[in-house]
Image (cartoon, rainbow, N blue to C red; front, side):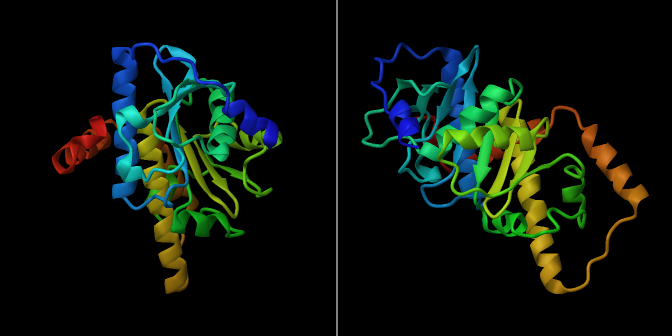
Length: 259
């Protein structure tokens, strides 16, 4: 753990001029942080979302450890190499959450298609992560993940580089992972797709918790479940329309995420 923290705390190089592509990525990621705040998927200053810098596959953007999601702006995001080198560090007095480094660099390195990675400790997601049954197909929200979600057993807070191999093994080629007794993780090829995945996975967890508390569950037939699962899998451009609508709402309410 100490070796990993030292790796993250290397001397920061002077930042180069930010390209238009990186600038837009920063705006999109800051908006995603604000969106997760708006939809109740935050845990004070904890948790993290990362986004690969366009055209720079080994460089990612992530949040400073100490800011609330609703405070994140485009200029407040750190830029690091997957090896831990800090390429851009805002003069903010903060640092990087060691768990963010361990979890997100592992996924980005193992999955070239995972451009955006979200990790949450939401109440419902954490509750389902503690259920032996895992995510159940009790709602159509959950059907898109049926057979397409990994499970990762708890081995303590993810702050040790030795935990990376098992994490990426359990994620496999899925875009969603339930981290048992911990929380949720999703990835996507775009910010829109990652938001699509975390929004529906979180919704599925909330529905399951409510339904299990209310009484006996009714499950769909295997045939109906497969029809639903197949339909969701065929959706093109996952999250594009939803994310555009969320961006419009963020712009109306508080466009300061662009700063």
